[in-house]
Image (cartoon, rainbow, N blue to C red; front, top):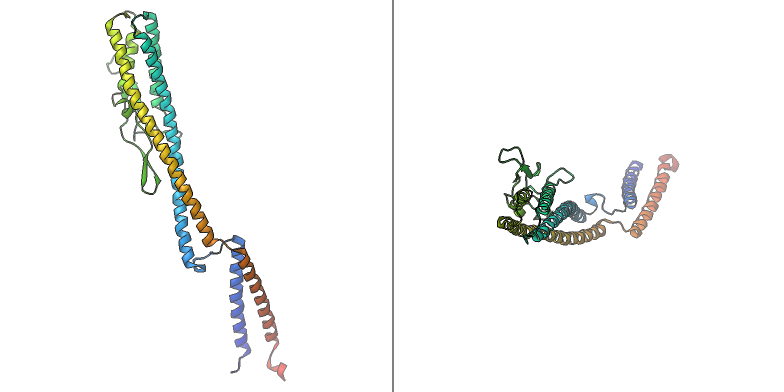
Length: 309
């Protein structure tokens, strides 16, 4: 069978193109450090890498959510600790005033302190995060959850009012896991904010110039306020504990997801990273093959019928 110069040219051109493509692929692999550039390089490995990368993206989003949730839980815990300290300070003062020997002036000063601390608790319950959301109003986080209003029409504020709800916001922190991200003022102090209004009423009564410290009603009011503080403190501490438990859960989830992410990274590397040793051998072999092909083509292209005469 006779092979024409044209057929030789086509054959060598085809071979050269194939070698050139393979060399370009190896060069790209060596430049990127990746063995699988296109799905066709290794369809099974490429599919698995895509699955692992999708899981990594999901973990990154979960970790971002966890960080945000952890930050807001920490904020709430810190604020509630401050409120609890204020309540304990008031309770200590009331215990001292409960013996019936306190002077009217001391009771008036105590009333002023209670009013001030109660106002500060309201300010704390109206805390806003960096995005301007109110933390303790349930899912109603665009307006202050607690206000001090005039409810008897005399032009002076006289009652604390709760404007939020008892619902909890949630965030996805793992596959299929939603976590509550807040506690509400109502679950700690009731929708009627009993402890705040009890303290407010007591503060007003203690500042009455006609108050008689020996009046049994005064002692009864003080005892009632202490009981109200104890009940509120128990609910408050329960809320603080729940925040701590959620933080512990977030820590466990973070550790678990970090472990999975690390394992995924290793698997992705094993499936897709280039082994430079074999790649260098392949690169050198392809270079030699291309040089040989080019030399052969050069010699063949010099042949013609006239060379044979």
